[in-house]
Length: 123
Image 1 (cartoon, rainbow, N blue to C red):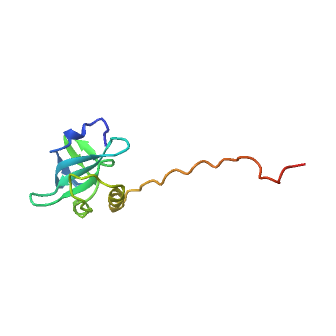
Image 2: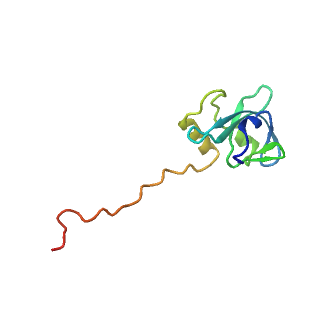
């Protein structure tokens, strides 16, 4: 996703799935707590439907519409956490798993050689 886009400008835009089928209209944009970068969009999938969360990272803004690289059925089956609330890390993890996106584990600390073990000195 282009990071220079103001997330407020996404609200009200149409969203389409990987096949060009309309999903709905973007209701809300959720920012990453640590970076402030737009991470999720809540898309209203119909007049009386709930909002579905979609990841913004693999999505693209093309000619004023959001194109999400997933099928509409998968998007509509995404976990429902309600809109207007903060997404917890556990909820985000559920969404990442739903979309089959890898969440990188924390990078391991480098293996340092701190010297020799006590009692193994060369004499």
